[in-house]
Image (cartoon, rainbow, N blue to C red):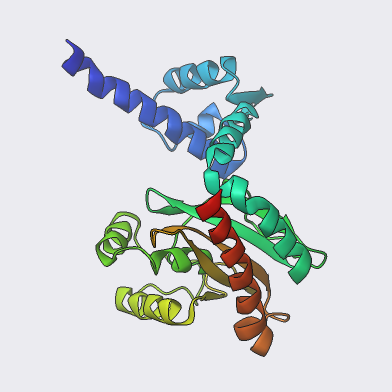
Length: 255
């Protein structure tokens, strides 16, 4: 009996999360709009949304539904359970102040990158990224800093699972080219994002490596191409990031 019911339960759970993802991508949506994306009747979709609304995971505004703040509670819990977040957040905030730019902390989970912490310096630009956002690893400096220190077979597995979609004309979409970049990251100790995910935005990133030589995440500084030029882009910011990473790595070891 249990074996015959399990697949149905899994499908229901997958549909629930797909509905939440659809609401996230659209900001808000009506039942009629959602029926175009799901092979479900309006009454079935309404049942899903009503259940999510009753439990506080979605909010109804007129005829539309949006993501509820209760999901922020789950996300905040996941964030604070990350040991790296507790160790690195103050250093990343100080990095933003020192650089006057946008500083980021990213970790890998299930082959994707997730922003754990972001801090804005005095001159930081606004971007589309936010704490908790899920991103591909191949088209960000943070992601490449992490990929460079994963076993090659794990990197291949991630690329097989998630692909290498192009975000801009500068995104690397060829595997061998990416592996050449990852080799360069290992040699220099830092990764560069030259408008690979967001047009007009550059990023310098370095990995966080623990005492067992395992990559735990990466930190970066992002800013407009107009300010990320020449020595600042390839020397000053990499040196600044590596100094901060060194402090975080020591704290990981001795905390």
